[in-house]
Each structure stands twice: as C-alpha cells, then as structure tokens.
Length: 253
Ligand code: NAP
Image 1 (cartoon, rainbow, N blue to C red):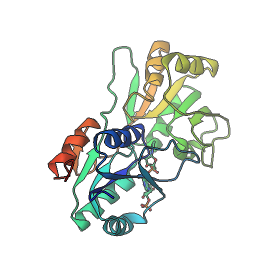
Image 2: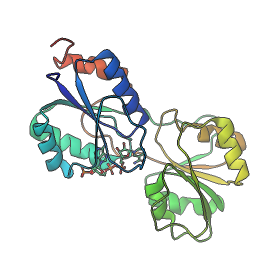
Image 3: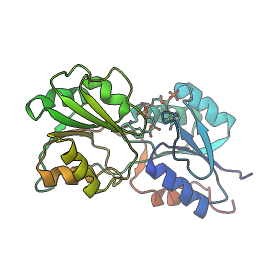
Image 4: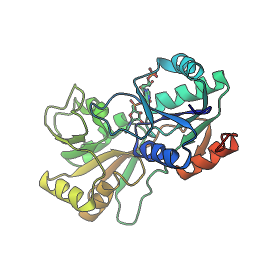
C-alpha cells in the first residue's frame, strides 16, 4: 500500500473528476473519497470510498489519525458549510495540510434578471412579488424552508425525493445533472414557471437553467454562498496535483 494517504471530501462532480485524475496521474497515492451518504445511489468515484458523517470535527480528527492521512482536500459543494468547517478544525488539530477546491460562483450577464439574497429564508421572502409558479432548484434538503408558502406552486427537481415538510402545491421531478439549455427551456415552459430559485453553486453541471431563464426573460432569485473556509484554496482540480507535489507527496516518494 502507498505510504501517503489523501482524504478527499466529496459529493460533487469535481470531487469525482479529481479522484479519476489522481488515479491516473498519481497512482502512488492512496486516495479515499468521503461521501455524506445523503444520496441513495451515488455516482461512485475511482479509488477507495467511505460513506457517512465522521461525528463532527473530533470524529474527523480521530479518523485522520487512525488512517494515517497525510493531506486533506475539501472538494465538497460550496454550500456544504459544516463539513468544510469541520475539516478546518480537524486538520488544525492533527497538524495536516488542507486544500479547498472551490469553483467560482456564477456571474450575471446581459439579459439576466437576478436578485441575490443571503439565505434560503430570504429567498422565500423574495419570491412573493415575482411570480406564483416557482422552479425551486435548491436541493431536496432546502424545500422545507418553503413549506409554509401556500399561495405559490413549486416545481422541485432533485436526485432523491425532497425531505418533508413540503409545500402544499408541489410537483417533484427526480433527475440528476448535467442538464442542457434546451432541456431546461422545455422544463420551464412545460411547467409555466414564472420565477427560478437557485443557490449560487457555480460550475457547468447545473448552469443551463440560468441560460434558459435568461432566454425566457424569467427572474432568478440567487442564494449567496456561505463564507469560504479559511484554508488554501484553488478553483481547478488540476491545481490539486501540483499542490500535492509541494507537500513532498511526489511520485515515487
Ligand atoms: P454539510 O451541511 O456541510 O454537512 C452536514 C454533515 O454531514 C457534516 O457535519 C458531516 O457529518 C456530514 N458530511 C457532509 N459532507 C460529508 C462528506 N463529504 N463526507 C462525510 N461526511 C460528510 O453538508 P450538506 O450540505 O448536507 O451536503 C452533504 C454532501 O452533499 C456533501 O458531501 C456535499 O459535497 C454534497 N452536496 C451538497 C450540496 C448542497 O447544496 N449543500 C449540493 C450537492 C452536493 P459529521 O459532522 O458527522 O462528520
């Protein structure tokens, strides 16, 4: 077995691509991807995989020591704030280098009609004046925030069914990205959507809905990201390979 273990906190397309990249370019490393276990049938990455929470920062620190991890790469979703904070605390405690991979957020383009809000709760307050039929593209765990809004009709799209409580007037489409602009346009039209609510996830996997909304002249309520964790940060998975070589985790070492 390799002498250098990397824990890759995953649950995103980037993390999956990074696991493949490292398997290809750094077969000398032992890379363990960690998934939260939220999705019933997750798309599995290359390499080793473990599933489930660690039990907070203390549990994570214990796991890092037990598995003799040499470095941690946090490639979780920009809105997965708890695990990212946990990684900062645990790495500081164990004395491990930590790198955060964060794709840039989306930027408004000519023709867009966006309203940025600081939270899902603020988004629920903002849709009132924008339209009755809402495409809620914020992930299944956040639908409950909109449960009390009886005057609206919601379209929810998620990989697994959304967690209750749910809004009274609701349709659920189970689907997994990436999505195309043509597909998103068709979805918005078919359900006569008047307003789109989404998190500022960034990336290309789910950006097509923003382009479709622009084409159809629909307003978008965009939930801002939580603060980025205080750690070294890169935007692209290729930069992780060079970061790992600066640690002395070089091929053949
Ligand atoms: P979160 O609020 O930051 O995490 C809640 C708890 O779930 C954490 O405290 C941790 O439990 C556990 N956890 C989260 N990610 C984990 C991982 N990669 N490996 C092991 N345990 C993990 O996260 P979330 O927003 O629920 O997201 C859960 C997962 O889904 C993340 O891996 C994220 O990358 C992915 N995801 C999230 C979103 C989103 O919009 N939030 C979108 C797409 C994918 P313990 O404290 O017990 O360790």
